[in-house]
Image 1 (spheres, helix red, strand yellow):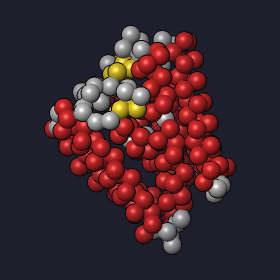
Image 2: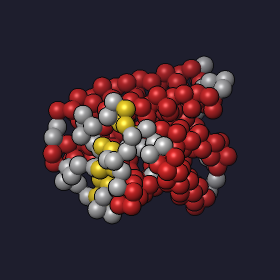
Image 3: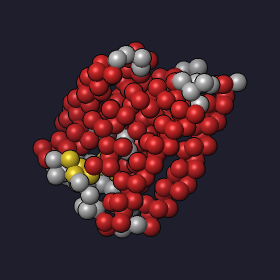
Image 4: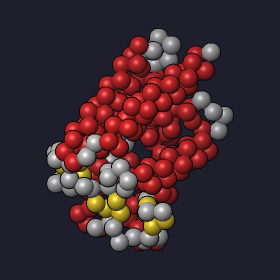
Length: 218
């Protein structure tokens, strides 16, 4: 019963959040969009953590998954930084907010978790979690990559694309989610410093996977 409620609560939370977030992001432009995305990233993480705290007696894994993935979400923009500065395959429009290395808007530190958390959480409630992670992450990133240009979040440059989105990141993104799920199972209850080291290690793996995919797929 707790498992069923946990999945239902997560689906309701994300349905409500994105029902608000998507129209806001589509209607805002320029600096207004930048500050809206900062607010939405904060709202998502605060709301997810707060709901997890309220649900702690029913299932402590909710908050534990958020706590585990947040350092990873904060580290992953470093891989995007590499794509912008060294590979020249990614561009983020300037929406007037602080940027990591002058390249990646800071709000992405709180946005990666928006796909990592629900994918891992839904997978936890299935009989074949790794298959679920692979399928959901592929579908989710295809949607994100396709929607990024019309929402003016980012766009690919100088690489093979289909319907406006780059092909090379898809396999690394699926591998990222698979590794994140495995790491949560293995290190979810580890001390904070170990979770941070694991997050940095996964981010490095993802950056390397992107570089190889760019070499092979282009």
